[in-house]
Amino acid sequence: MQSATQTAPVSKKMLWAGRIASALPVLLLLFSGVMKLLKPAFVVQGFAHFGYPEHLILYLGILEIACTVTYMIPRSSILGAILMTGYLGGATATKVRIGDPSFFAPVVAGVLVWGGLFFRDERVRALIPLRR
Image 1 (tube, helix red, strand yellow):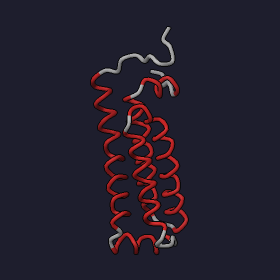
Image 2: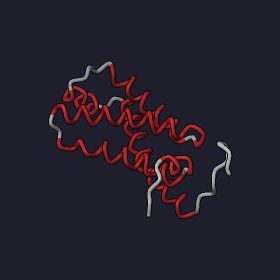
Image 3: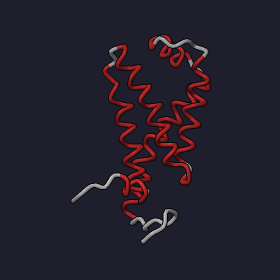
Image 4: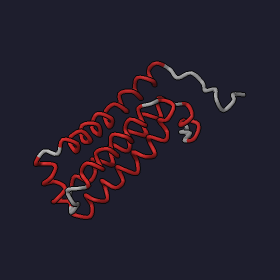
């Protein structure tokens, strides 16, 4: 029997599938967070369109990057996935609230966050056992 600190080895195929699936939302959210820090005109216009005040752009950019970095660190990846899920849930709710048809994009990103973690981390597979 394995202890809580030991995990079964992950096959190379599963590990790489997890890395690729995780890389997509990481790149998306890092890019989005950096754009919020730079505050180009289209980001400011987007926030106005969504009904958020401009002064929140910087804070949300920092939050987005912090959640993503937490996810990227293997030791804190599960906490990062939880934080990213909350962030992406807020993005989904914002888009649904104004009737934006692209609300599925943050949902897909959230699925990739957990899918990538599922492939990379035995602890997540133990929590969410899929039967054959």
